Length: 322
Length: 248
Image 1 (cartoon, each protein chain N blue to C red):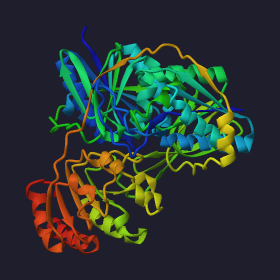
Image 2: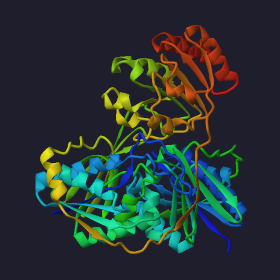
Image 3: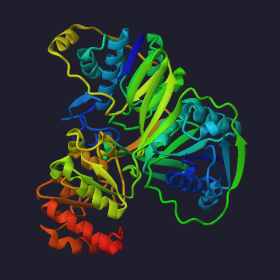
Image 4: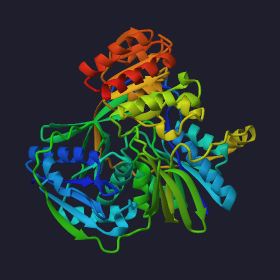
């Protein structure tokens, strides 16, 4: 039996999330491997550029539209996707493991009785089966697992799967009005931290720790992040001291991240922190203590005074960028 | 109102994780187990809600006898009753959720708190699955919780901000750090918890939809190059970032 594969397309403010493009590419790649077919499903009010999903191998995208669905509603989204999956016989679902995907994918697992692999960082195809690799214990270990039920759900860690270059193909859009969505649980408002890039989605992260000596010195972290177009992160020590909001915490009781570049300023590298960022592609550490564990995972290190080094680094990068 | 809180017993976040001899689970030797950190916020919110509105609280945990330690901690913090769903072996998220949903239903709890994830398998899934199985409204990753009559309003952490989410009872809320400041157990609470009985029940057999093939260590990262000790090496660092790493 050929597999029917569905990728859920997440939108915020009518724009498709990058993590959904990554998931779309994975879905269409597995459709080829499984001699199946991959479609996409988006839920929202106005959504821009849905046809661009064709660039990532998707032939058809269904848009369930209603002005009440512009913001996330867990109950409505769950009900609509469940019905769409059951009516059309999809058996493999892909989500991006974003705050929305993390909330939604498990609900679908319950509704359609599908095995679930969350936060996958690799998917391999062996003997006709999808083998998912996912971090456990905040990345201190990895498990390879397979889903044994007929229906399967995979949620993919953002920034890990490469969507490749856009082919320029256009997807067919199937616009459907979603009547009377079930709004039992509804987002009524969103408070945005203005202009803030989130560590979980950023390609570059600049993080600060106890070595900053106080919240008044985090402008050093922010200025370097600004010139790099990076998100700002923090160690648990900095968060627990009340210097930074919890949303910035990287590590086992914060966010586990895999950016291309991670710059650790004044972070010694507790085991919980290393677990949360060690899969970053390039790690730079600036710390006074040459024995700090962070240097064991850093590609490049400077054992020195961050108050001296960081402003020079920020200026140097500013020069290149201008 | 009956309030349930589901708790898991996990390796301390400071624990070093080694792979067990079966190649599929961790080696528990030398690992200290604690209450899942996010569950402490769930316990605190259950207690605060009871203090405000009255009712009865029950903590539920699925696992081996070792989980009693975590249930005792919940009792010591002030939870009224505790239930251990005694079960060894591997259960995936769906299978755990099915057992918890059965017990929550048996308890008649209208409001349920979970931690947003267990820091062992890190799925962030069991709360939402349990809510769907029960037909309860669910808000995950809550950093604030307000109950007014039947109406619930939470703030939920998302990328770069917070969503304000509204729903009604019956409901299941998963707790994120920031929701509250968990209390310490008092000496009196600890003494009282020792005397309390933990009810033991046998959940329905596991029906797993996933199978772990192997657990492995993450690829080891080699310590890199120390470039120097002051700002004079910054141009070299920038050159490496541009030419080798190609990130700027």
